[in-house]
Image (cartoon, rainbow, N blue to C red; front, side, top):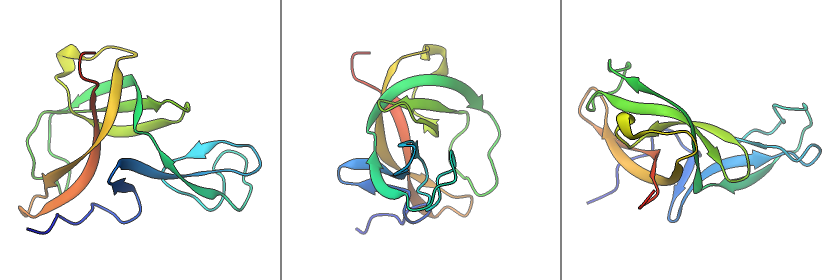
Length: 132
């Protein structure tokens, strides 16, 4: 069985799971997704970097209505994880939101979800670190 195609090319790697971002050669800030021009200082020539796979929960909410194109279950978690290098990433969350807490250790994982047409695609989400 072939893996489902990614939700969009160039956003993540699967083995090991990493987000594909960039780092500015001038100001040193990381960005996700990858950029050629730094969104912080405007410098050109950003270098590709692999980001993650660990961070801490920074903000969260519950999605209760299916967004366009999504056919998976609702409700689901959505929020912000601050990666270990300080970059904050908007992401799906795989945790019961009544169990969410600021600073909770999280890790990146690659998952398969369904579009509204029933077709599978691969994307990323963050889940709690075991034992946290």
